[in-house]
Length: 59
Image (cartoon, rainbow, N blue to C red; front, side):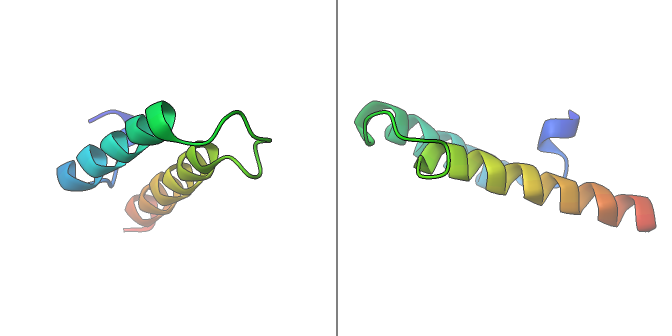
């Protein structure tokens, strides 16, 4: 599994990609990064992967 998917279940990755694509197609127009829902999703996913990697390194 690649590092960008570490600690993420298949169901989470599928739902995340589907939501991201729907926001890309039907979401709001261009917004600043701190207001853009797609960028928020990307930040939350990166944080989730970082937590999973930290947990794996501790264990």
